[in-house]
Image 1 (cartoon, rainbow, N blue to C red):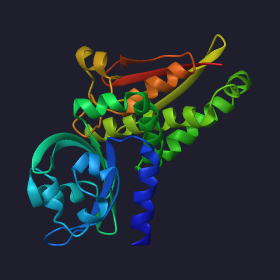
Image 2: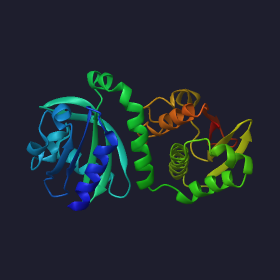
Image 3: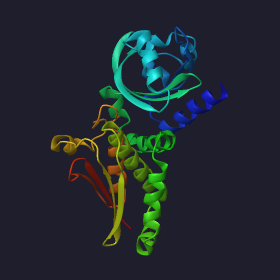
Image 4: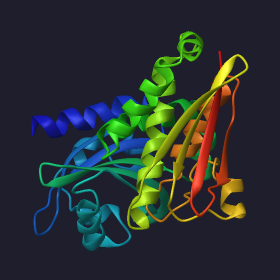
Length: 273
């Protein structure tokens, strides 16, 4: 149980002061029960954390027990993100769930998407999402070798390495990891292939491009790709590219998606020193 509690507390620190989020964990028994709860459960679920422990996990979802089991199964091997209705005092509300499998059950970071809560914490949201994306990118089945290749490519260019010193290394690494993960998922969905990574100097900064041979995104999807909670694919949460776009803006850069010749997508992000 120690590992479970550590993960729950880690996710709680990730959302920080956001009053629209809490963390709940449940087991994988025949009738799943809530085994841990923390964060702003009173605001999100209308129940104190201590009162939730021991309750049926199905009581949180409009889909009942079946929904709790399905979500636990969904994140058995890799973290997952879902947007679905949950219950607060028996009444449905829209929620974003960021899920991780642990100890045979599931841990969910639950974010209330109702307008009043979103507006109340709008100033905190972008940074919270960036911190969570960094955490999940480390845990997810991301292509670590591809990330290392991307960073090594930058380091091989003396000028790029000098410019990179003026950037926030943690934020830049987060952006690289997210882009590589996005490309890996897109590639898997179409049966596999090679993810290509390139970097080049542009003026006083540099540009990193990640190319995947997956399903080509339509112009309509590309136009909205950087809006938070607008998934580009069925498996996506709609967070990744929004976080990358914010990181690029922080470094006086931008991010764009182009169609890859022969099918697929090229996501390019620029950073200025």
